[in-house]
Amino acid sequence: MELTESLIKAREERAEKYCKLVAKFPHLKSESVLSYLRASDYFTAPSSYKRHGAWIGGNFDHSVTVTELLLRFTEEEGLKWEREESPYIIGLFHDLCKNDQRGFKMKNDNLKIVSRECPDQRHGDRSVELIEENIIKLTEEEKECVLYHMGVYGGDEEYQQEMAKAMAQNPNIAFVQKADTIAARAGI
Image (cartoon, rainbow, N blue to C red; front, side, top):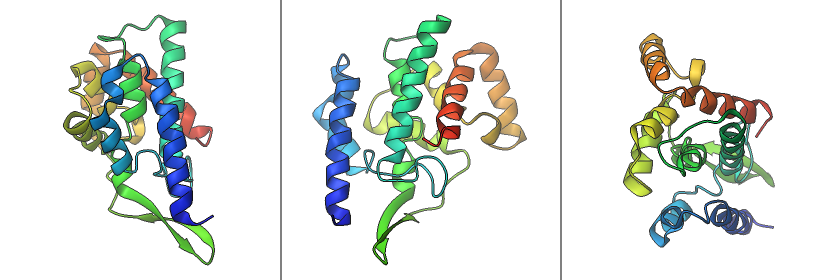
């Protein structure tokens, strides 16, 4: 199967999975949102070059796993969110900016992940911008969860200080970090 065919198949299979996952939130599967997600390679982008999610659709698969973990933590730990769809929004879109950063090419009949632009260590900022420009206006709680989802891997001392202040007010950030770490360490 050619790369283009593989990408189209993966995109449509994952788009269908996405629509089922967010079925009770029509605004998250509107035609404009789905058009953006398809055009931005949301359903096909890898999550990393060599580690977790380093395959066609790896970033989507990682994001679904984070969402499923957040839903489980919400149930088991009694987490409270400002709106019902927050775990879906945060989990599914926390790494949205990675769609622009990585792609694929065929080299000697092997699939190779290539860089489109230099990834930013604090990519949560860019993900927040993309979510708000193309999908939905975020609550402050959702913004903080996306901004600080990388935890101790997310940036310099200033970032760590800002994160600590936010976590004192928003305990759900820790559960987002936990879900992201579990998924990444599982290779997803």
